[in-house]
Image (cartoon, rainbow, N blue to C red):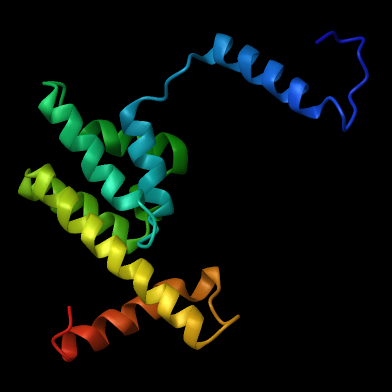
Length: 155
């Protein structure tokens, strides 16, 4: 696409593809694993695959003989977000537990199961209380539902 070509709604897809190609040429195609982990930690969504992705990345790197250090992850967090204290509590616990245990495969499987349960909880909540599920109340809903399930022996 030429600079002389006017930017229109019709050529938006082409324009974005060309822009993406140029960006990849300048910045490379890959993001380092520790920065990806830092981003996943910051989003820390319990109902998506953010937390299991972290354990999965650590596991794969360990299997391939290229383990990722906690220092490298902490540095990436600091570069991107200023301070590790900015992480959501669930993310901090996840990364602390993963490194203290060192069994990333087990961590991956446990976290993945927890994410599936969280997603089911949120789907049930949304069915029972349509329109009440919002980004700002998800963590509170999950905390209450998990506590209730544990109390009743369901989790």
